[in-house]
Length: 396
Image (cartoon, rainbow, N blue to C red; front, side, top):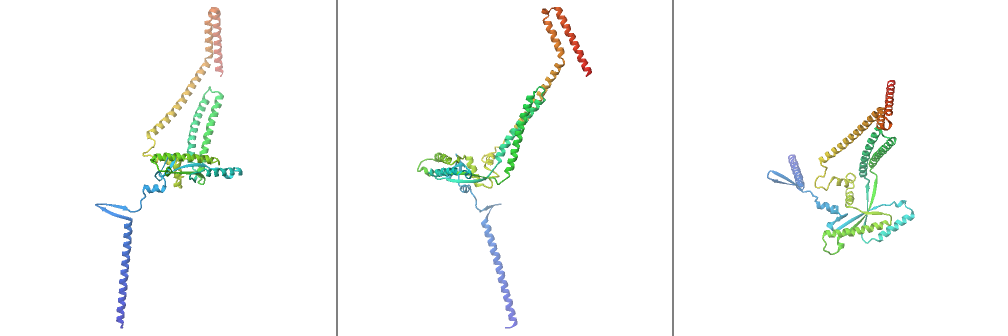
C-alpha cells in the first residue's frame, strides 16, 4: 500500500470521527432541550385566551379541609374539644402539681395510695398530658400598670389636698399632719408599684424561666350512646353531661392525693391547643393577644375616634375644674383673711360702739344722767386708745 493510500484512509478516518462527534453533540443538546421542556410543562401550563395569558401552577394546594385534618379537631364549644365531626368529644381537667420531693415519707405514701385509688376508680379511658411553657409575665405587667395608674391619680389628689391645707391659715397642726401622712402614704404606694413593674419587666427578659402544666384528658365517643335517633345538638348535650360527671369524679379522686383540679373553659382550651401547635410563636403572640385583637370579628372593633376625642375632652374638663375649684378656695380663704384683719383693726371701735348701744338700751333703768356720763367715759376711753394706737404706729 502506497503512502498516498495511507494518507487518504487517515483523512477519511478523521472525517468520520468528526462527523460522529458532531452527531453526538447534537443529540446531547436535543436531550437537554427535551428535558427542560418537560420540566417546564410539569411546573406550569400556559393557555392563551385572545390577548390575555393565564398561568396555572400545578403545585399542590392545601385546602381548608386538609388543615382541619392536620389539626385533628373541628371546633371548641361548651368547654369541649369536638373532633371527627362530632364523633369524639374531649374535656380537659387542669391539675395543680404538688412538690413530691419535699414531702415526708408518710406524706409520699399517702400520695401514692391516693393515686392508686384514683386509678382503681377509673371506668373510662384517660390521657395524662404535660405541657412545658415559658412563663409569660406580660399579663401581670399590664395588671400592675393599671393599678399603678390608679395609685398615681390618688397620689396627685392627695398632693393637691396637702398643698391646699398647708396654704390655709385656719388649718390646724392635726389637719396638716394628717394631710402630710396621707400624701406620703400615696406617694410610697406609687413608688412601690413602679419598682414592681421595673423588676417584673426585668425578670420577663429571662427566657429560661419555665413552668410545667399538667392535664387529664377525658374523651367521650358518640357511639357510646348506641343506636339512637339523637341529632348532633342532643348528642353534644349528652356528651357534655357525661364528660362533666367524669371530670368531677376525677377531680374528687385526685383530691385524695392532694392534687387540686378544675375543668378548663373554652378560652383555656383554645390557649392549650394554640401552645401545642405554635410552641415557638406562643410566647410572641399568645391566644390572649389574638382575642383582644378581635381575630374572630367580622369587622373592626377599634374605638371610634370621636370617643377618643370625648375622653380627651373629659380629662381636660376634669383638670380645669380641679384647678378652678382650687383657685376659688384660695380666693375665699384670702377674703376671710382680709375680713379677719379688718375686724382686728376696728376691734376698739366696734367695742366702743357696742358699749354705747348697750347703755342707750338701758337708759330708762340707769337714768339719763348716769347714761350720759357712762357714754362720755366710753368715748374718752375710745379716744385715748385711738391716740395710743397712733403713737405705737408712729414709734413703729
